[in-house]
Length: 232
Image (cartoon, rainbow, N blue to C red; front, side, top):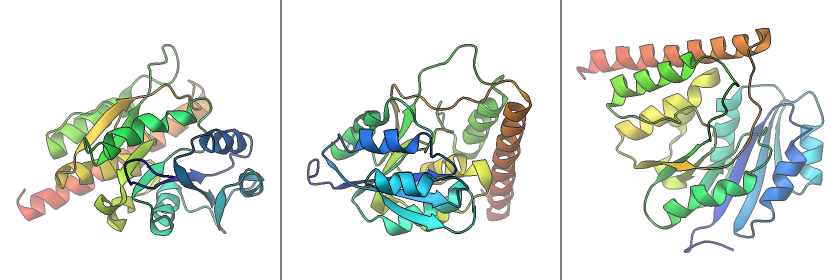
């Protein structure tokens, strides 16, 4: 089944998501317009791949943990539907909200959409990573988006290219957003009611955000140098 003639595939890059992946997949299969669900198991140490396959998804298993960007790239190279949706493996409630992501694309209002989550007061960090991403996006593209770090996204497959995924660690969402805006691809933020794991204000949470911060800063510096060399 399709929407307005567009067939739709969902790629879920997953690492050690055995406790959540089944619920996500079964929720997605309630959406009858989805043609294919592909879980790219990024070298998980748990039973993510087995549970995903049991739930009915196609599974591409990587023998080693290569990172989210590489898993996304393999999904892009494997899935050839008109519309490609990326969904994080830790999405809890609200996986069915991807309807809101694909609808503007099917209606020709955007070539790419990014999920904008509701605010969660009292959770997470102090906003330094989001502030860096917002500042970097403004400096590099002149545009402003509030959800540049969101991993829940939908695209027309033909606007993507493999180099959109050539980033390290947590830099992939930021980097590919910059790439799309610089190529004048119309990006639309869409409000959704989804939930996912939120890193807290403990040591593990601060380490997570530190890696996010450094990966995004690395992308900003790299692209700034490239722009200066090209005279941009």
